[in-house]
Image (spheres, helix red, strand yellow):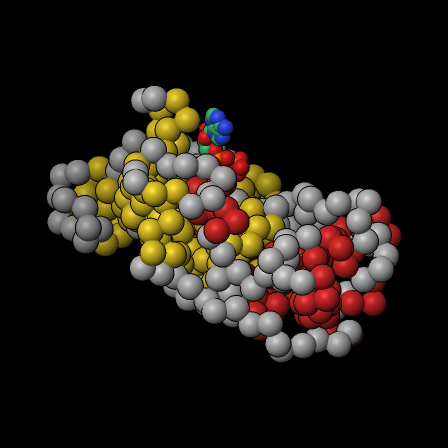
Length: 365
Ligand SMILES: Nc1ncnc2c1ncn2[C@@H]1O[C@H](COP(=O)(O)OP(=O)(O)OP(=O)(O)O)[C@@H](O)[C@H]1O
């Protein structure tokens, strides 16, 4: 870990708080809700990711927590204290929250130390310097205290932004797409470093991301949003294995989706019959098969298929398969070497554990 290369400290621990949203709704324009009835809480010391597609309301919810935006209805609490609601609104500086944005927002004309010291206005000059140095040591950048931000890499600048946010020992850290400005190789290490710093400082953190894998790597729990609604709040494991809706399933893995009628508690598809315990008999179901749901073989299996295309991805290959009686081609992700290279007529077997069945609604995956 990059931080380990410099001295790290264990002082400067925050008192983690619980931040909760109680039935928060928001409209930028009357009649066009951006957030609808959101109730959820980040527990003390927890890393909670707000995950969802573009426009789902993640940033707006974070800005409401920060006090940069005021919700139209509902309330926000820090522990038992209401920090915003119809009758109360604390400004950001009175909320004990630290903010980290994707563009870091460092001041180019201030030294790195002064950038970190910036938010410590309540302290004497000497105390502020000491606290800022503790914070810089924690992110492994104390040796750059007197330099200016322009000499740092993107990842280092992100760590300065983190140092600045944790210097006042906030009860809650709010981070909006904090790694999106970094290239993909740097992203992994900066994310791992950040997570370790969050754990050491024991602050509660709410992190906005649109990337399901990033959320799974970082979060204790994930709040999945869509169109301003909370779809599901759960661990990454739970969201992947037991998604509440087809949308949630599709956010965590690519799917082949079939529409099927349910009879005798089972959905009948061209690729087999699958249990549909949560769908009423006679109703339509969406049967979602992950790309990993297929075993393939040159010689045996349950369903004949023809290989339409193959794309080599290293450990796995991506297949597009035509199956007699199935209108759309099926996409499958299989281990490289599972098929011989020349066979076009193959056999498929569907693994039921990678098949998810939902009541059919208007939503898509
Ligand atoms: N200041 C604003 N005025 C009007 N509409 C806004 C404003 N800010 C956001 N919106 C709208 O609110 C909705 C939610 O935006 P928000 O930025 O919270 O979503 P998001 O999930 O964070 O998306 P992204 O990942 O693209 O940042 C969008 O439809 C957006 O256009």
